[in-house]
Length: 129
Image (cartoon, rainbow, N blue to C red):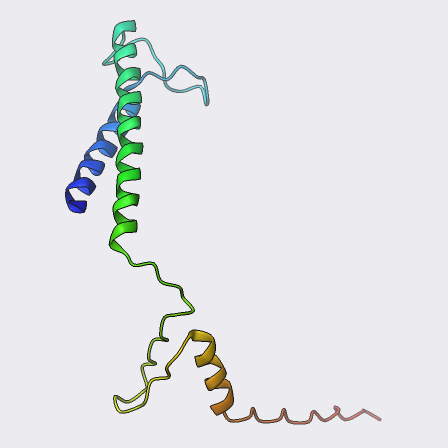
């Protein structure tokens, strides 16, 4: 169902882009666009393109909302604090994975981590005489 809706959504996007690009420019943004001749020059065609743009934009929003609703139903609601931490690339398969929430795992890692080495003392540079 979601795949079909994505395909329909993409077709609507392409059609919406095409209808927007077919419309005649009425502004003088950079002094370009708008000219005397063109594919759709009559007022009736301009109204049809405006109506088609509005319909396609409405369909775009409807399919976007439907995709969002479908995505929310397919994924379980999980908190990042309740998930287990991913294993590091260097760990072996026999290593025991920490259990509990993310906060508990961080506390365990803090307790088991070796203390950081002390920073070496910096000597003052020699003074020139």
